[in-house]
Image (cartoon, rainbow, N blue to C red; front, top):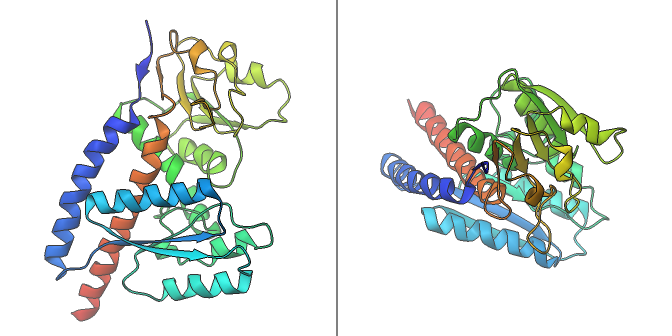
Length: 288
């Protein structure tokens, strides 16, 4: 029997309907405040431009505001830091997204960490990562946080399960592993240089492909009955896992496309709305 499809596209439809209602409620309660996401795009990478446009379109669908900041490839680290600081100080901006990657001459980590924790809705700062890891309030990195929402929605049990995350990027693999750990899974984090990787993956009851290589994780590495999460997307509509070889014998899986991808943007909007709600709450408390 084929595994259950963890349909991110379908879940996002319900999430956006709920976001519309929450945005309207916030506007009514705060005299017209519109939750606003600022996106920063440095350079002219076409894939990055597409991702930013998708995020702006999603904001529009749910009634949220979006502020687009496009900077030339020649932008310096100091110039980018100045723009981030300006957005940090702007009360009309509730979330800041610096599109990755930035040009190589820019100190990306320094710029990520300059984003205010209150506006770090993409979960990219070291401060936010540390708070998330310790179970303190923070906006977790959007893609792994979206995966956790997907697993929760489809009632995929995690407590006590053996989970293997293949990938160690600071915005996907590492936070994914810690989120699973915080959900009481027993987690192994691997990468492309891990020795005996197929044997490790075969032990997993939950497999997350986050290595960034098309179909790097082969279907015969994955045990029958596993929950398979493919966080990759590559030309030709394939992910990081050879899904065609596993869908008939896994317990559940995320399709590519339509699984993890839609959840990233919906989670980003959810975080931005939460940041706006928190900011308005702070204003009300200060007015008392």
